[in-house]
Image (cartoon, one colour):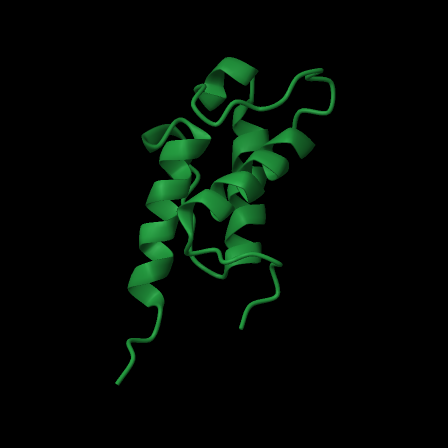
Length: 94
């Protein structure tokens, strides 16, 4: 059971959640965050990236190195990466 209101290991649900989180760091954007557009194109600076990574880490309960934002530069790629990380940590059924 999780407290997110979504299954964080489901890539599509995680992607939607990440889109919402990124949008909170871009209050003056004036458009929807495109999950296939590079996050750097939105003008996120290094301070925002570190805060975003820490926010995601806290919410998901996994380590998220801020460099992952650059290694997986779109929300879609980041969601795929994080879903994989979460799936690896999920207890296996006996």
